[in-house]
Length: 199
Image (cartoon, rainbow, N blue to C red; front, side, top):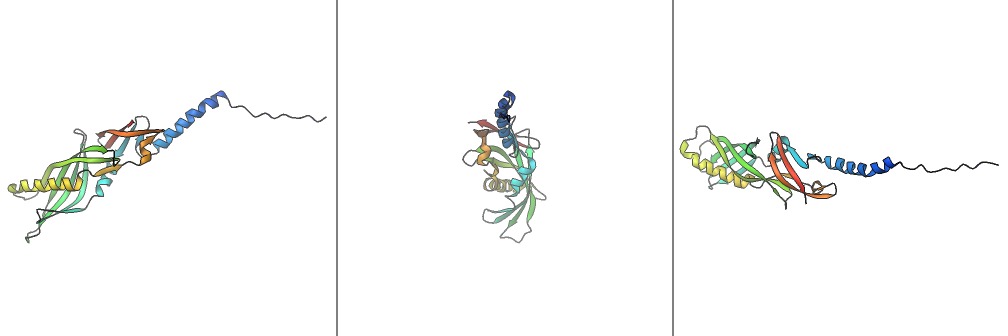
């Protein structure tokens, strides 16, 4: 008589069954870590100096009018990270021309210092309350210093106030099945770190 062979399905080992949830959790962590700058172990996003510089570059060149007679052109922004004071400085070239007089334009540099804050409605890290840090104009008489600072204050409010350095995608605020909210922002020597907390 022919013999009948009974085939049995191999059982999954206990080790394999236990490994499945761990593998799923690891997969979620790997997916989260695929987002630029996210650290799954410390729970924060980091953005490099170059990423921040690229964001600021999009705002320039810029042009504005001051007191109806002065034309201000702003170019070549340079982002400086002030780790000690947890602030960022935007230094730019400035050219000021009097539209009523045939005098040559005045060239110099303008530095604006800003804090950083997160806006939940915009899902963005913004430059917060920028202020004039320094105005440098070669050959400018000292009596014009106050006027130049006033121009700088206008530039700060019109150009950089609440300017977004980074806008989070919705999926970047949903990590490992949980919604997260950006919190403390720390300026580093080579970028910024945004701590995220579970809601």
